[in-house]
Picture 1: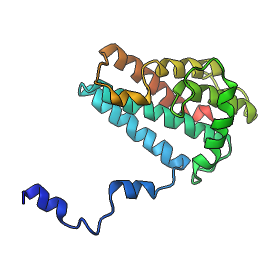
Picture 2: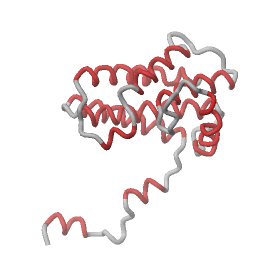
Picture 3: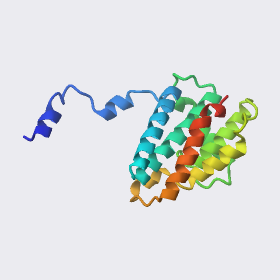
Picture 4: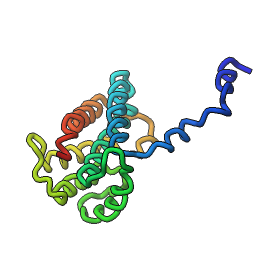
Length: 183
């Protein structure tokens, strides 16, 4: 048995798999926000190391989580509550309200940007605080949607330095303004 196999086999029976550990954690607003921050920095590290596609992939997920957590907060989901109890049914109902958005899948950044603006309006929170506006959220979401989508995991990395610049700029904007989305 190789040394790696010996290490991996030690305590294998007693330790739950990573998937089992993660599935046991409820996806709360707090969990989404912490994961988004982590994925943002991991994505940036990958980009700096020249792994453009992988970095873009993680940054797209970070933005998706920030937007979804903002939607959940606007819908009065507490930081320790399961976000999907509220978000999933709302997503299914509201996605029909945006005929101009072609991709209406659960990871569509363009759709979630529209949903954020819509939910903010319906929640009666009022206008975004400057420099954020509904138009800037829509524009940034659409811009990132043009470079990132969940299915990119099935493709070889073809991202350019320009793609990295655009995605990092938009992701940094979302990170900077994430609290403005729901306050």
